[in-house]
Length: 160
Image (tube, rainbow, N blue to C red):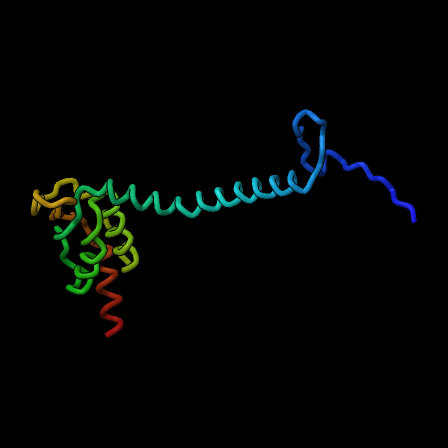
């Protein structure tokens, strides 16, 4: 039985210099390579796993004021249950004027008020300055156009 001596391809396996005795390929070197590769993959996995948690912490720190009360100006034409729905969209959220007006605007559009104008609530009243985040009261001003209100009333009359 003849045995053939095969020289390992240095591109396929890791090589190293051990105590100055020249290049070698061994099980130990392969094990170290596998462990290093596993550690790298595991570190990447942990990084991607913790990214959403880091974002949540930043959101909590950035929230200085939470909406606890909301009132609406020019709300004629909306039913009581619609105003309640709008309040639920705003109350309990961090104060961000642009986000508040977007939420109200999107909901009005869902109800068919396509030409509604919603203004950012730039002013607010602090309800308790001793609490952090501070509970606040905001006033959201919006206008429903006559064509939206008229169209909504006609469709409601046809349903009855």
